[in-house]
Image (cartoon, rainbow, N blue to C red; front, side, top):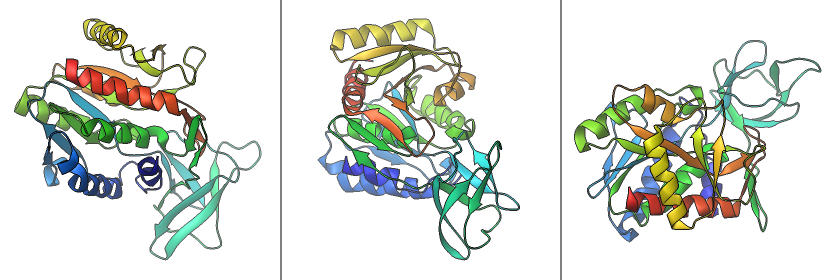
Length: 304
């Protein structure tokens, strides 16, 4: 889990994904010659901080968002949410401003819905702060902030090791409603004719989705994937004998929603391990579900 641990410690809140982009590019360039197929790397000004990896003759794309939830320093020590992080008194935060590195704590007055920072000086207005990582593993679980979605990116990089034909898109801005998937989808549809996708992201432990029961295939959340494509995914998952669970929710969203809102005829399905303690420093995922996630992605990318 060393790779995942490194990724959970990288500062990459929504809108400031540059460090994660650099990490992934370095990792790909270091390891690509060890992979079954060497990808074409597409990135640069026209793609902002996103990365596209193209393997062979692709028919399906994996989307994994690099950004995390965070907080922005407002006025009078107040913190504004980036995405939907949970707030709690004394949560550890870190970042950097013009005056230097910052390690501080969150302050939530009793009965208040607002969060503030506790630090020995004023932090520059507009500074982004993220949860401080405390990466823990046990026989069964891994626990840290930002498993959503460093684990989705980790999964994509593990799939890349054996991928012969396919595309992996590392996207930005997902935690704040999207913004990069539209042009990524446009590029891969118009350049490669790819119009089906898997969303490598992390979902929630709920009444119907449990730890250790396999990767979750989402039949719907706020978005609804096309049923014929969903049925094909489920049939392949059954054929694979890899453990999986079916998820049905009425809230939540992902890069899949942005693909559905694009002017391109994409089919998509969210497939990911489920976590407890969502959007906190203590997100928790079962190791068997991580393995099932990677195994199912490898199988689907061969069959779709």
